[in-house]
Length: 340
Image: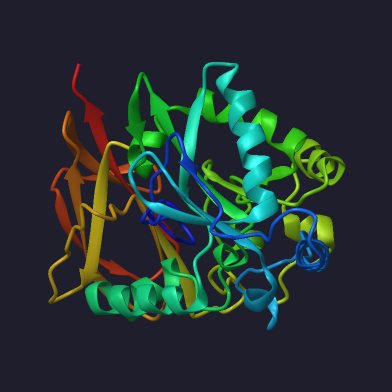
């Protein structure tokens, strides 16, 4: 996930970069015509057929126990020089998708794909140290419960006029391009995984760059044409809360947003909000009970200017840093203006 991981994205997280990907599979084969080669090919086919391309991995469904020892992957290098690991068949389909997009003048590359459970644990540990447990709870997938473990989830980035565009806040400036990309996904067995407005089902905010390989184009087309989440297609809607516990009278949620021209940071009262340019936060979701006081801070990107904070659509403050006592559902937005 390119820069971010999130229930309401943030980091925009983890969208690790991509643009013109090149590389080769890290596998070897026996000389053609030998019994070993035939046996190896049969083993590979058997392994490939054992993959469930409709596997559901989300906040409630962990990666199947045998998955990591079964999945066949390749390692490729993207235009940024990063190593990206992808499930073999998903990568082949991605190359077809990439070629089809290039015929329309759209260039993409792979930011990230497979992350092992161990790697996800390192991310959790790092973010817990940097941002605290509450932040990690809201934005970072629990190890073993990230779709990126499968190798079937791919984060894309763009190349615009020869320049790689891989930061979330930059990529969201091209909605028309993402629409063109999404229109091509199903033809190659991909779906858009995290739909806008479906956070209560998927547990994550809208990510136009996060696509998921399901193998069968017919299935992919049905999902895309009906504007469904994978959970809805499989009939496996969440049975426990993946968003704030609305039924709990003492529980409430506070959303914090930017509009793509800056970033935000927050901290409990008494602590200092810290920005991280490597993983800029654009959206946050706090699950709270009881009164809590937080400090929200806004930071404009180059070429933009901070204007104000709004609360539930109404003007709230022109201070870049505000201290707010939270006791009910609310939505705060840091509003920025792009310089002409």
